Structures are given as C-alpha cells and as structure tokens.
Image 1 (cartoon, rainbow, N blue to C red):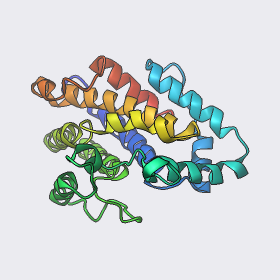
Image 2 (tube, helix red, strand yellow; image 1 turned 45 degrees about the vertical axis):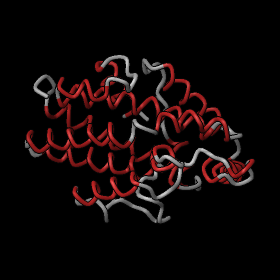
Image 3 (cartoon, rainbow, N blue to C red; image 1 turned 90 degrees about the vertical axis):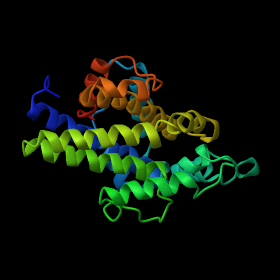
Length: 252
C-alpha cells in the first residue's frame, strides 16, 4: 500500500463500500420507491474504461427513464421470475445463493452457507449485516454487504492511521472474494439474462460482474503479489484499470 497515499486510499475504500451497498440492495429484495428514487438521482459515469460497466450504466439509465408508476410493479414480477423462479418452467431461476452454485446437488443451505456464517461471526459482523428477509447467509446480497462492511472498516483504519489493521482487513476481503464470491457469482451473473424479461436486473448483474473483477484485481494490488496466484482466474485486465474503475464508481 506504500504507493498510494493513505487519504486517497481511505476515500477509495469509501467508494468501494458505496458500490457494494448499492449492488447488495439491488438483489436483496424487489426494488421499492426509495431505491428507484436513489438510482434516478445518481449520475451514471460514462467512459469508465470498462465496456461492460459503461454498457450496464447505459441500460440502467435508459430503463429508469420509464414512468415511475410502471417500474415498481414490473420489477417486482421480474424479480420473482429471475431470482425466485416464479412463473418459469420447472421453477428454474438464477437463485442468488452460493450453495446453489457450489453444492453437488445445487441445494440451499449447504456447506457454503455454514462457512460464510462462520466468517461473519469471526469478524463480529453477524448481527451487523441487515437481513430483514431472513435469507441464507450465502445469499449474494449478504456476501456483498459483508464486503461493504469490511471496506468501511478498512476506511476507518486508514483514517486512524492504522495501516496494519487496514492491510489485515484487506487481506480478509481478498480471501473472502476468492473463496466465497468469485467461485460462483460470475456464473450466476451470466445466468440472470436467461430468466429476466426486463433489462434492469441483467444490467445490474453485468455491473456486479464487472465490479467484482475489477475489485478483485484492486485487492490483489493492495495486499501484495503473493495473492496473485490465488485469484489468477478472475479475468481482470490490469490492476491499474481496476483502481481507475473503482474511482469512477464514486461518481455514481
């Protein structure tokens, strides 16, 4: 972390936390009036350097220009179809749970759920994570919210000048990203367009995939080269582009 000023790095952690929080909200439940208002008030950046990110932002901007009264009901139906399997053949969907994508039989509440719950508890964040819908702890929204909480923790450590604590927290994030996010979320994101009928959730899935790739590269850059071999398959182009893309997210 020597090459980045602590103040700049602390701001970057805040930007990461903001992005993770937004992505988590998109998938934890149907969009409500407040979330749509927040999205409409955002400035979606252009020319971020990532074609996938730019495309996702354009799709979201175009969709959010629709009349507000039609968006909420339409998105509720599409959420149920896409993530719950309501109204689909054989109730198939892009179920946003790590267990579904990593267990042998594709079932809920499997080993991945137990593992992430243990990690939340070890970090003292089990009660902090907002889980009003009592979803399994390996739900994508909760895994993203966990990364959001750790990004905030890193920010606070950096603002206090505690580089050792910040680096340890970043290492935890990198490990969690490798062990419990990248091992399934990219495949899940590719499944979302198969079930969604509106562009909203595919755009968010695309944005999530792009951000995860970029953030994984950023974490590797920050915690050291020794982590490179663990996440070599995450598909990010370069760590410099990752830092640039994360800073662009602050404008959102």
